[in-house]
Length: 138
Image (cartoon, rainbow, N blue to C red; front, side, top):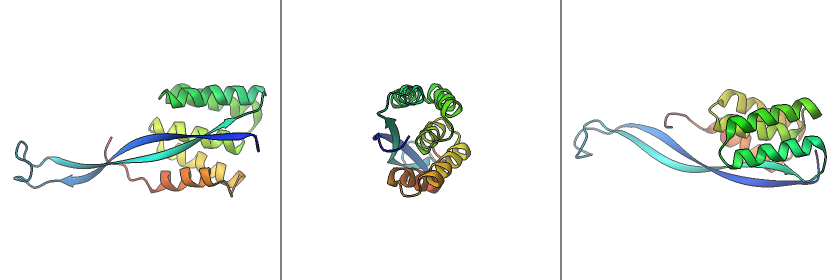
């Protein structure tokens, strides 16, 4: 999709499981699980061209920004089928996959986007922070 792209940040809250606190440290519960919450940013590529693939992609971005990740994944896959594997769509499918709970699929899509556009700082950010994330919370 190339040069006519705008990137939309999407803030995602992550809960990291840190273990169980010893009893006595939390007065109401014994052995309560302890979490740390952080916010990570994912970047979605919004394409400014009037092609059918761009239109599908942009509708899917809108769905993802609304939190409708499964619906967005369907449209991103449709865009891939219509226009081939572009870095923008692979990245976007990675974001939607990650937020829908498919970590392995997300890493695969992020890696594909980075292979096709290795200098893109948004794709690199999504890949690195997606790979480094340690699940264990929600």
